[in-house]
Amino acid sequence: MLKLASACLFASSVVWAGPIGALTVTSNELIAQGGEVRIYFAGETAGFDSVLNLIAPPGFGGNPFFHNHTTPIGTSLSLGTYAAGTVLRFRMDVLSTGLSFFTGPASGNPDNLIHVAHTQWASDATIPVNGVLVGFEDILGGGDLDYDDNTFVFTNVLSADPIPEPVSIVLVGVGLAGLIWRKK
Image (cartoon, rainbow, N blue to C red; front, top):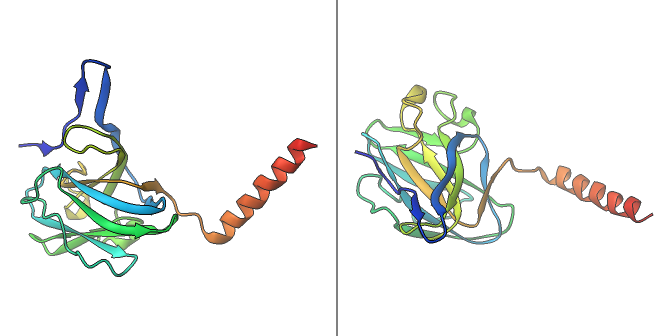
């Protein structure tokens, strides 16, 4: 039985809500935009029990959270307030198998595969915020590749490759040089 927050159509203005597009497998990090980051439980289709943990930056005192078989869809939790550019890294512990899978690069996972997919989320009746939908695959070796074994919507984050600080300084310099050249 599929227990995911579903997309809905509002007849008055023909606006879709929920996932915007298909989940895309990605090693992109979740990067705070600055301010409070909230997470909403969006559902699961898993046979295994799992929970989520915020592992970076260190110091979050609410781990683990959102047991996939007992958390009501739409439940939200504040993960705290973070400066813009802070990388948020998560670990899903699969309680049924004892395995853990991480957001970010495949090299962080025991099978060297990516176990996370992202897409944009538009506010709906169940999860009334815009954000990033993140889904986990909970089986070693890629499993069924559905990335809906434990799903979440994050607010105030971007799904992106982090830009190393020296590179961002160079990009700012290039942008300023372009502005100066354009004014001439």
